[in-house]
Image (cartoon, rainbow, N blue to C red; front, side, top):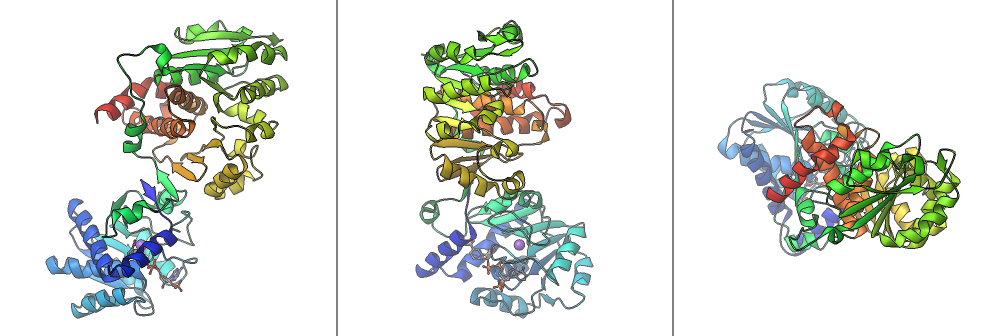
Length: 505
Ligand SMILES: NC(=O)C1=CN([C@@H]2O[C@H](COP(=O)(O)OP(=O)(O)OC[C@H]3O[C@@H](n4cnc5c(N)ncnc54)[C@H](OP(=O)(O)O)[C@@H]3O)[C@@H](O)[C@H]2O)[C@H](O)CC1
Ligand SMILES: [K+]
C-alpha cells in the first residue's frame, strides 16, 4: 500500500482541475466513499459531523448533504470562525444551510457534542493542518476523545500531521479513518498510528495512472506484497536450489542467538545452514537442530581467537549468503570476522554485534552492496551521526542519512514498526506487536532475511519479505496464544502457518 505526501496530493488535485475534474466532484466522491463505509460498517445512525473551514470540512459538508437525502438524523457542527475557504466547500455549505443542517459552534461549542449522537465524524483538519491546534479546536478534540460514540475521521484524525504522524498539540483518536487517493505516512508512523485504529482508502476519481506515476514517500507492506515476493518452490529442485547459508556468531554468554537465527533460516526454506561458532559451542549446535552443520572457530579461553578470521576466510566461498552478529560478542576478533565478510563481497546480513563491529568498519561498509544491515535505534547510532532521540523523532530522516552515506546497502531500522530503506525506496511493516519485544526476535529476523536471499531474492526484497513474514507471523500467533508468552523461536515454529495462509489465502 502506498503513502503520499500532502504536497503530492495537492499536485494531483491541481492536475485534476486542469483536466476538468472539479474539486466539487472530488469532494462529492469523497463523501460517497465515506457513505459506503458507513453503510458497510452499519453506522447509518444519528450522526454529528464536525467541520472546519478547509476542504476536509468540505468533505464533511458534502457528506451531510448526501446523508440527509436518505436519513434525517444528521447535523453539522461548524467550528471555524470564517466561512469555508474554497468554492467547493462553500457549495456544500450552502446545501447544508438550505437543509437547516448547520449548528454554529460559539463559546459553548463543546455542549453540542453532548447531544444524542451515535457517530461523530471528524472533518476539522486533514492534510492542510499547518500548525499546532489551538482554541476552540483543541477543546473540541478533547471533547470528541472523551465521548463514547464511534469516531470516524475524514482523511486523517484531526491534529495528526499527514507527512510524519506527529501530534500537533492534540489529536482526535479515531476508531476508523476513511482516507482518499492513497494513505498517508501519518497513518502509520508513530505516534500517528495510535490515532488511526483502522484506515480505509477510497478512490475519488483521480485517474489511477496519475497516482501510480507519483513516487510514493512510503510503502506499507501488505499481504499482496508478501504473496508476490514469496520464493517459488519447484518440484524439480534440491537443497542446493535454495541457498547455502553460513551464520557466524555465538559466544559463551549468548549461545542461543545464532541458533535461533539459523532455525528461522531453515524453517523459512533455505537449503542448508552451517553455523560457525566458538569451538566450545560446537557440540550444542546439532543438539538444537540436527539439520545444522557447524564449524568450530579457534578460541582462546572461552572466546574466539585472532586466528578465527584466518581460519574462516578460505571457507567463505563455499556459501551463498552469510549472516553475522547474533551473539558474536564485542571483541577485536569478532570485528576481524565481520571484516573478512565485508571484504569477501558476498551477500550478507549484519545484525547485533556485527553492527557494533561496523562502527570500526564504516569505510568497508561504504564499498559494499549485496548487504543488509539490521540495527535497532541504539545500533543505528554506530552507523550515522545522530542520537537515539533524533532517530526516534524522525526515523525517515535517519533512514535518508543512512542511504546517503551507504548508497548501496539495505537498511532495516528495527522498532515496533521496522523501516526498510534502500536508495529512494522506503517500506514500513505495520503488523508487529509486543510479542516481538523480546531478546531473540531480532536474531529470528536476521535468519529470515538471509534465508530469502539464499532463495534468490535480492537483499532489498529479502529484507521486505523477512520483516513482513516476521511481523505477519507475530500477528497470526497472538490469535492462538497470549502475546506476553510468545518466545522468539516459537515465531519460527509458527512460520508454517503463515506460509500456508499466504499460499492458500
Ligand atoms: N485529493 C484529495 O485527497 C482530496 C482531498 N480533499 C480533502 O481536502 C483536505 C485538505 O483540504 P485543505 O483545505 O487543503 O486543508 P484542511 O481542510 O486540512 O485544513 C486547511 C484549513 O485549516 C486551517 N488550519 C490549518 N492548521 C490549523 C490549525 N492548527 N488551527 C486552525 N486552523 C488551521 C488552514 O488555515 P491556514 O491559515 O493554514 O490556511 C485552512 O484554513 C483533505 O484532507 C481531504 O479531506 C478534497 O475533498 C479534494 C480532494
Ligand atoms: K479529519
